[in-house]
Image 1: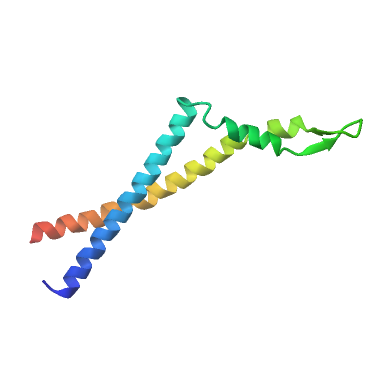
Image 2: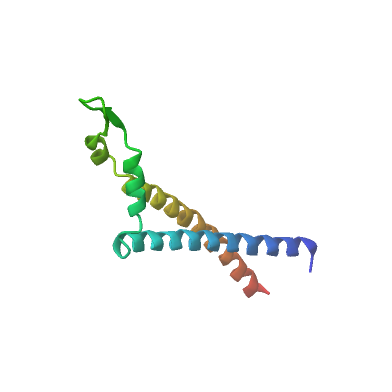
Length: 114
C-alpha cells in the first residue's frame, strides 16, 4: 500500500468520525432540550430564579430599591437560552451530516473498488 493511500484513508476515517461526533452531540443536546421542556419541566427553574434576582431595579417611593416587574415579564431568559442552544445544536447537525455522509460515501466507494 502506498504512503499516500494510507494518509488518505486515515483522513477519510477521521473526518467521517468527526462528522458523526458532531451529529451525535447536536442530537443528544436536542433530546436534552426536549426532555427539559416537556418531561422535566422544573429542570430550568433555577435559571429563572437567578435571572429574576439579576433583574434591573428601580427607585421606590420610599427610596427602597424594588425589582421592576415589567422588565422581568418582557425578558424570558429560559426561552432565549433554549433558542441559543437550539441554533447551536442545529448548526452542529447541519455541518456534521454532510461531512459524515460525504466522507463515508467515499470510503464505501473505495472499499467496493478494492
